[in-house]
Image 1 (cartoon, rainbow, N blue to C red):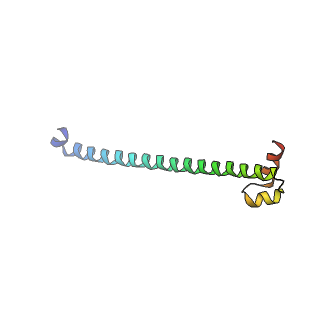
Image 2: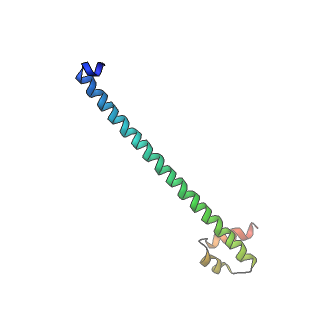
Image 3: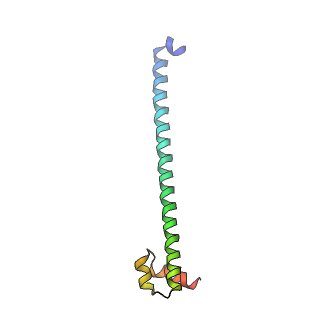
Length: 86
C-alpha cells in the first residue's frame, strides 16, 4: 500500500526485488557449479580406484610396471607404492 502512494518507495521495492532475484540466480549458479565439481571429483576418484584394481590384478599376473602404466593412468611411482603396500 505504501508503494502505491509513494512512487519512490515503489521503485525502491522493484529495485530490491531485482537485486534479490539476481542474488538468488547467482547462488543457484554457484550451487550448480559446486555440484558439477563434486560430480567430476567423484568420477575421477572412481576411475583412479578402477586403475588401482587393474594394476593389482596385473601385478598378480606378473605383468611389468611399464605395461601396467600403459593400461592405466597410474605413474610408475604409484604402481611401486601399490606393490610395496600390498
